[in-house]
Length: 280
Image 1 (cartoon, helix red, strand yellow):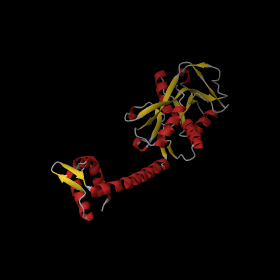
Image 2: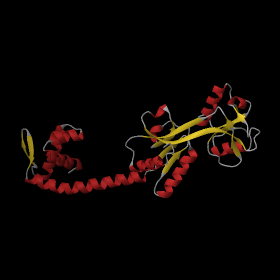
Image 3: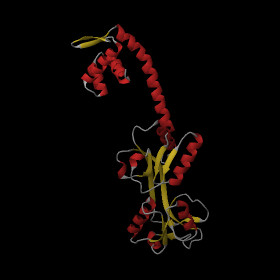
Image 4: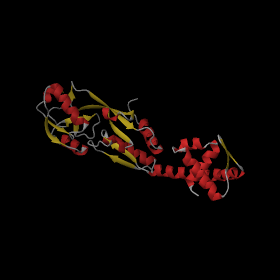
């Protein structure tokens, strides 16, 4: 006696049709009929009264159906609980391609509230296997056409320099910065692409003296006076200032991208991120 035989019998008894059972399980009707006949042979009893156009449970079939109602309710409940536990235990897979520090703060706050939460957070601008992630944090980008999205954060960018910079207190244009040394993040980052774009529109190529793939090192180099660089609107120390560049006003909207049909754990984290939305 096989579980599939019992499933075929149970569904056929409910629908009074082998054809409808076959349609549900995507198998030929003959496969369902043959499986039920093997079950009847093992039991030594007919379970259905058959006519050319219909099947109907007999007394033996009704007795087996009542027993299977209890069995399948328990079995289906147990398997659903096991799957739910597996999904609850699975880590939330995040690909973070912008506002990395802020997303890290959100993860820390979330895990403090929900200690059972697990994350696999990848901070990598070069990753392209988007299907392997539950949520992607990035600016507007045409490569996420298959994803749903929600606005997460709007950030104003300006140009940051060391607190003792000779540019302090001056009203400047981008063109006046053409001879200044620039520090930038990695070539795939949004800030690097933004720097190249604004300088190109201002008519010059920036003099990049250093690239840092680490945000902490990037800020330290600017604070030390090794160069100037694009930064978000929040200062992290008193060792840096924002320059008054009159023709530079850049805002960037960051989105959370996700696929339909995510797990409950992912949905809960998405709801948490939406509650942090500063674009309202």
